[in-house]
Image (cartoon, rainbow, N blue to C red; front, side):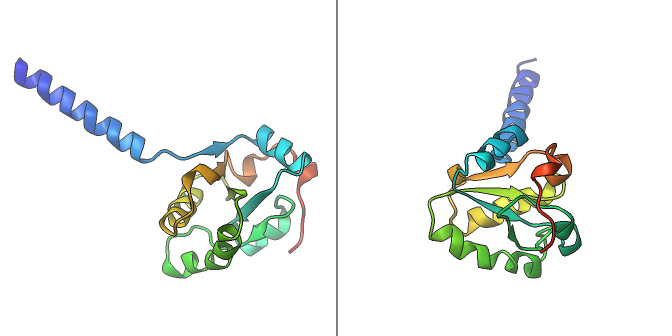
Length: 140
């Protein structure tokens, strides 16, 4: 019995550690809308592919076309934005199609390059879940 309880405690601890290891900062669309309306200084890193970026993106977004940020080539597309982030203290909002894997890959990559996690956010539900289409820009 004691052995079983110990195993359950160990497994629960390991599972909790795994969940905590994948913790990201998210910004809700409502909050992002307020930030845009109040012109809060923020660096919006958009990783959508070119055609999707041209259809719609948040005003002032930095187009990187890095989605899904898995290959070295895709990660290299984020290099240009690193200089902007490094020379600023503004928060960074990562925008991808759905706010999932590509955004997390970007977050991890930027973190590996020294960007403080306290500054980074992922737009919850990505651009596809953005409920304010009238605020989107088009073109490139």
